[in-house]
Image (cartoon, rainbow, N blue to C red; front, side, top):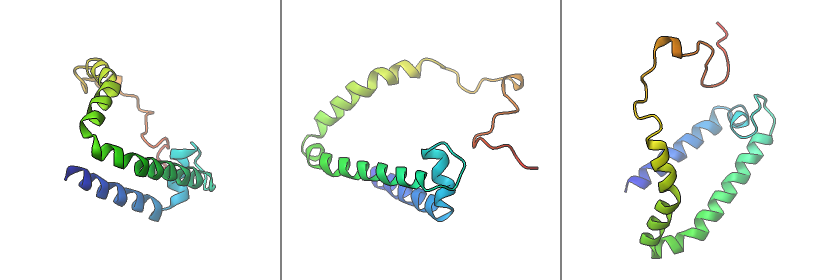
Length: 112
């Protein structure tokens, strides 16, 4: 049931990205360019084809063998997860001097 709510959120997210300026939103993510070329859209399109083909191909197997999928997933992801869980055991403990005034999440400085 929880997976279905995430699917809905993903559909809403993609819809918002596409309706608020697909080229402007997809290019920084897919081709690391702040332009309005079509390259980001075509990369997005190709990645969605790969995801859909993989999903359709994997669904019968994962439906028949959910425990195997769980064990394989844990074997692949578990070691990295355990490693990274202990790197910074107290996140968010930064002093004001540790935070750069030049760090902007979207890579663009404010215009005013």
